Amino acid sequence: MLDIFMLISLIILSLASIGLLYRVVKGPGVTDRVMALDAIGINLMAITAIMCIMMNTDAFLDIILVIGILAFVGTVAFSKFLERGEVIEHDRNR
Image (cartoon, rainbow, N blue to C red; front, top):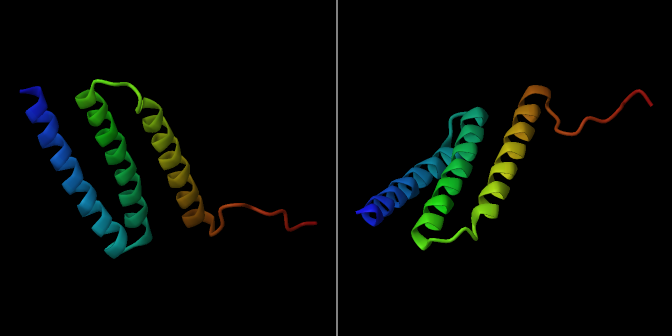
């Protein structure tokens, strides 16, 4: 029974990722695209966690952490770019 629920959740998360990919490509604004990219990262983490449970292994738990860190850093970089227009600030007083 648990395997059926895991398979159904994988299908739902995959369909959600496809919908979010469409939002990244056709999003009306940059903020919508950034939110969709962040949600894709969260979906990838969930898919990896479900696959770990289905395979009865903990080999992919480090990958979940890496995906989470990359998604967070990417979201912070995009939000900084949207706020200031640049990601890395250079000292222009020199």
